[in-house]
Structure formats: C-alpha cells, structure tokens
Amino acid sequence: MDTSATFKSQIRSAFYGYGLAILAVASALVITQSLKPTVFPTPLFFAAVVISTWFGGTGPGLTAIVLATLVLDLYFVSPVRGFAIRTADLPYLAQFVLPALLSGWFTKKRKDAETALKEARDHLDAKVQERTAQLLHSNEQLESEIAERKRAEEAVHKTQADLAHLTRVMTMSELATSIAHEVNQPLAAIVTNGAAGMRWLGAEPPNVERARDSMTRMISEGNRASEVIKRIRTLSKKASPHKAPLDINEVIQDVLALIGTELVKSRALLTCDLKPDMPRVTGDRVQLQQVLLNLIMNGIEAMADVSGRSRVLIIKSDVDDRGQVLVSVRDSGTGLDAQDLEKVFEAFYTTKTEGVGMGLSISRSIVEAHGGRLWASPNTGPGASFQFTLPTGEAA
Image (cartoon, rainbow, N blue to C red):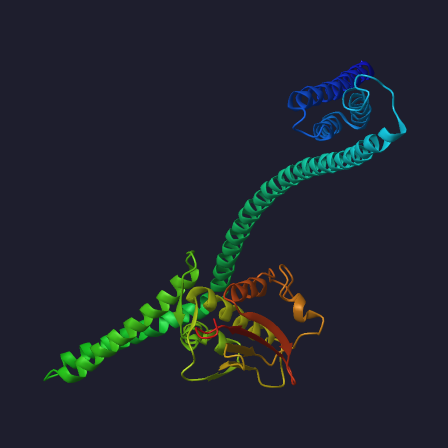
C-alpha cells in the first residue's frame, strides 16, 4: 500500500518536472520570436533551464537544455527551420550549452542547499519543541517536588516544635522540687513579713514606719514569686516561636532563677562569668531558655556520681573572634568519650538510664535555626563543655 502510493507520487513528480521543462522552453521560444530581432535569443532559454532545474530537478533541467539547443538550431541558426548543424554553427551552440549546463549545476546545488537548510531548520524546530516539552515536564516535576518538600519541612517543623514542648514539660517535671522551693521562698517571706507588720501595728504606740517596711518587703517578695511563676508558665506553654532582640545574660539569669535549689540538692558549686555589655542577639526567649536549661541540667546530672572532688558548674558568656555571642556550660563530671562527642546530639541517643535522648538533639536544632552552632568538647581536666554561638545583630 505504501510502496504503491510512493511510486504514484514519483510518477506525478516526474510528469510535473518534464512537463515544466517543455512548457518553459516553449514559452522562451514564443517570447523570443515575438521580440525578434530586438533581443538576443539565448537569455530566455537560460531562464527556462534555471526554472526547470529549480522546480523539476536534474532530469527536467537537462531536458530543457536539450530542447533549448534543438530549438535554437531550428529557429535561430541558418538554415532556419532545418537541423543542418554546420561546423561554423558549433561555437554558437556551444556558448549556449556550456553556460546552460553550468547554470543548471549551480541551480541544482542551490536548491539542494536550501532544501537541506529547510530540513535542518525543521529538524531543529522539532528538537526545540521536544526539548521545550521535556523542560516543561521537568519544571512541573520540580514544582511538585518543591511543594512536597515544603509540606514535609512543615511537618518536620511541627513535629520538632511538639517534641521541644514535650522536652520542656519533662524538664520542668524533673525540676518540680526546685521550682516548688523557688516559689515557697517568696511565699514564706510574705507570710513572715506580714506577721511582722501585724506586730508592729499592734504595738503601743504602733510603729508605722516598721510596718511600712514590712509591707514593702511583702510587695517585693510577691513580685519575686510572680516572676518565678511567669518563667515557669513561659517555659511550659506551647506557643509559636517569636524572635526579638535579647540580652543573652538576661536569658541565662532567667534559667538560673529556676535551678537554684537543684544546684543545692546536687551539692554543685555554680560559677558565672558573664561578660557585661554583651551585644544583643535576635531569637526566641523561650527556646533559648530551653537550650540553656537542657545544658545546665545535663551538666548537673553529669556530676551526680562525682565523689572525692568538687562539683563545679561554670557558665560563661563572651564574644568570639567572629563577633558572635558565645555561651559555654562547663561541668566537672565524668566527661565524654571522643566517639560520643557527636552521637550525643543524635535523636534518641542517651547515656542516662531514664533519658529519652531528645534534649541535645532539639537544642542543636534550635541553635541552628537561630543561625548558630552547638557542639561538645572534652575538658583538659575532668568533665565536658557544651558551647553554642549565636549571631549578633551586626554579624547577622
């Protein structure tokens, strides 16, 4: 079926080409005779050869040359209307045949070049369209992957926030005794100052000045209790992160206010070396409090089994050589093995019998989310140090 159709198409093309050659030569003859003797006879026949070769191909072009030569000999070479080719007529015919062959050859080459150029352009267009379709498909896949990645990141962030909240609640539960003591201290002071005020007012005569002093101390202790409760509520509530300019020393003091009794109970000596006039950092107060609380509690627990020497916990704030805030928590506990320096930050890895292994992992995530870095290192003496950096307003 396909072979037959191709053969028919070739027959039609050949018929069209040779018919065009005959028609072109005939037209050149008619026009030349009508213009005779004002026009030289060969130019229009050259045009017939070029047209036949361009539209018909090599075969019709050669046919046009042969027909044009015969027509020139018949109508324009003596004897007219006779085919008696004499030796003297050969140069005249040769000056037509040779340029005609050259014109046909140039025309065929030009036609082949244009055909090849058109095919190359069509092939290039097809390639461009194919490549464009591939790029569009790849772009759609990439957009889909980006959307899926964003959804996965949002789910990870939500899960991380939930785990961070759970860790804070668990830490607060472990600090329940210390927190109760911190709250009981101002409450007991309020009761004591209230009773003293009553005695001063019941004296004869009433000592109003001493009673006023007792009332002032009661207000101060009430504010102190309120601040402790406020810190507890802040740490235990579940809220979206809120970043604001912070003084890291104030954040450290907030946490120390909650662990005083825990330090006494563990017989640990606290040393604070907080550099004054520290540059402010931009961060979430609650999250940074959680990081410090985790590091300090880990340091206290690391010294629980220490005997025969002092249990010293050193908290230091400084500025590193890059202009970042540097906070370190150094204990004098049992220390860390070299292979554990990075493993302690892995989720669910813990060296404590009752630990869940999330505190340090979440702490590192919080610090990195603030643009900083958290790492551990062994001390020259006993114990280990946990340090983290935070970019300041200038560094950020």
